[in-house]
Length: 462
Image 1 (cartoon, rainbow, N blue to C red):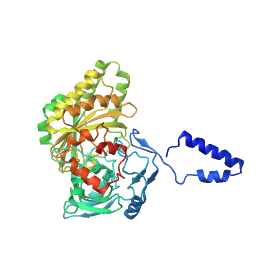
Image 2: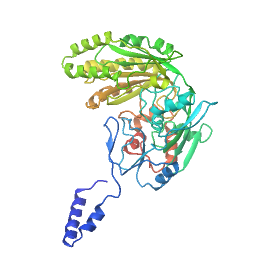
Image 3: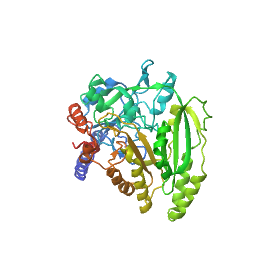
Image 4: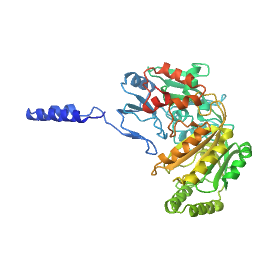
């Protein structure tokens, strides 16, 4: 709640009057806060707010009562790993941290049920204990389950969809406080929308996932010229279950990463205190800091470093190989373009970075994702290529992202809901053939917009 200058003057005047009449104790009583105000910020520090309240209900009934009694905007929050302003509000932020963990599983159907607030980082071991695994994972597992599916977060692999596509059923607490269980047979229109709902339909309290049997992966990583990798994309994506590359900006090279299922024994586990690939990122950071004034020399050094780099293969449980340590903070923009447009889009972005000498040193991420049928999923209707641009959290990202974003628009790109973008309803609606299907469900479940903050009102044109 903001205090205007006029309010302050009026309160001071009241204080003088009370002081003259011996009423300081009464003034103190009326000024005492009724609850503790705790600021919120996301992982990168790029989004922040001072909400009216931050609440973590311990049960679904407590959550329902909270929703029914709330007089402010309600925004669910997970691990605060979204870069877009999905959470910030001066209303109420609700965490599902207490509604967490494996709730049950079906060995015959290869399905499991988790609390919506479960950290993705804890799901691998819990599933392995019952012989199951997620078919695919993103390379960061810091998110909560409900947050990951609400933004259609994804890994890579032409045969694998996002987390949203792995959802077989879920429970949603709506604006009326009602708990709705939905799947393909029960409330299918809500189910389809809620599998990627941006937290605009309600609060997801539990999720039923389609899994597979536990398995191991081999990670192979190598350095090659970016253009050579793009020329060979069709073979690389066909011959590897999961393939991606991380393009080293201001150089000619990229790190290619291939993950494939294996029955080979696990390789020794690295020292948990080691920084792994982050050491390479930090080396590039130092080079940029001292060499950005000499672009040609910087590029030559980066190319030399890239040509001499080598990496050992890793074998381990799938969840341990999918996920990586990411302790270097950044802000991110990601768009998904039609799969066939991926190479051309990336080449144009790299040309823009080179020609304008855009200030960045973070690698670009290039991945492929299978199509799905979820109305607001970035991958609805056809396979897509996801391209991510990053900027270190201490560096301003606005000019860099503003230079790159129109290139994504040129290729029909759809923004990742959890990443930074500048589009509103007028630009977004034409990108999604089933846009109205989602917005009709949203309006029916939450006609007063109780789950909409300013950002989502812009996104949906409300």
